[in-house]
Each structure stands twice: as C-alpha cells, then as structure tokens.
Length: 312
Image (cartoon, rainbow, N blue to C red; front, side):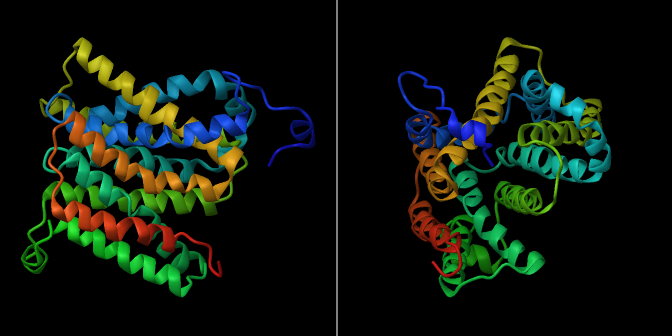
C-alpha cells in the first residue's frame, strides 16, 4: 500500500508518460516477456540441459536483483531466518519445478502447447484457494473452471478423444501440467502465507531458495554427462532469460499491478497464450492446429469467468 508521502508526490515520468500511461503500454508488452520463457525453452531444448538452464537463469536473476534488494535483505535477515521453510518451498515450486519442468517439457511438446496449458493456472489457483482456504466459488466461476479444464484436455489430447480414453499423452504436455500445478500452488502460497519481507526482497529471497533447491540436481545432471556448453550462445540464452523472462517480466508485472490494479492486470493471463501462439508460429514455425483453436476458445473465456470475484 502506498504511503501518504508517495500519494502526495507525483510519479516520475518516463518518455513523457506518467506511470499510469506507461503501465497501459507495458500491459501489452508484458505478455511477450512472459511468453519469451516458453519460446526460449522450445528454441533451445537441444542446446542447454534443462535443470542447468533453470539454475543459471535464476542465479543471474538474483544477481540482477541484489543491487535493489541487498540492503532490505540484510535489514530483514531475522525475518528470512523465521521464514526459511516457506522461502525454500516457494523457491522449489516457482524456480525449481516451474523452471526446470518447462525446459524438460520442451523436448517433447511445442511452445504453443506449453502456453495454452499454462494459461489454465488461474483455474487451479481458484480451486486450491477454495478447498484449502475456503474462498467462495460462484456458479459463473464454476462454469469457467469447467470450460478451461475442457480446453486443457482438448489440447493435451490433441483433439482426439481416443487419446484421452487410452491415456496416450505427450510426455511434454504432462511435464507442463506438473509445472502449471506447481505455479498454482506457488501463487496461492504467495498470497496466503504471511511475510515480513518487502515485495522485491521476498522475490529475491525466494529466488535464492530456488537456487539452493536446484543446485544438487544441477550437479547431478552435470555428473551424468549433461553439461551446458561454454559458448557465447549459451551465455546469451541465460542472459536473455534472466533479463527479460525473469527480472523484466516480474518488474513490469509489479508496475502494472501497482498502477492499474488487479483487474486490468489479469488481462496478462488472457494475452500470454495468444502472444505465445502467434510468436511460436512466426519465430519457431510451429503449426497451429484446430485443437489449439478449440482449446483457446474454451480456456480463455473460462479463465475470465473463473477469475471473476464471487458475486460480480
């Protein structure tokens, strides 16, 4: 919540735009930043070991965060010691499972599938909040959940009922489903677990927790012979993910949410799979199938209905 001092002072202007005007512009840029992770996962799936990619992505992200959070982290070191279990669990979910599993998935599924399956994460967030924390679900929200889950099944089953009946799923789609589930649990925990840390400092501490969780798996992956190549391309891949898909995406999201509120910011979840599908078609040459369209037709309105506040 903004302080009285911050309310009294005008927000700084950038490129002649007020913070609110800039937030509107960034609202339509942010989906591309989030989609860049899924696109990079698919584009580089045969260039970089998946667990190492997640580890180095978040290590570089933490390095970018430190100039902005080091003082706050030191100031709140007692809170970090009290909350270390939550920080490790959140890091394992948000940076470990959500990071590495998506990169593993990219070996056997498309960026388009990853984006559309991930788009259903708000549905699972609503369900977890309902059954764990007792948040009410309205009839419209229930309809939205049903629509989105049907859309996800259409994508996973590639529009073929026999695939669902015979449980013939793509391994990559299942890895993505696991990552999406972890993201939903991460999001609910982030909202409902109390913390004394400032927002950005908490993000840095969670990133550190994720790095600690990923470290032994990264070492094991390397000992198995799957080492990242020490090439300019490898460094550029990690730098791109750290700057755009991690640091940039999360900071833009925070600015948009602070300036426009939760309602308009939720548009990001609707736009990410659309951006992802179009960019995958343009950049990666992926073919959009009829089941992608069917899934999007069901998932996107479903997200809108399921994430509406009860009673609205």
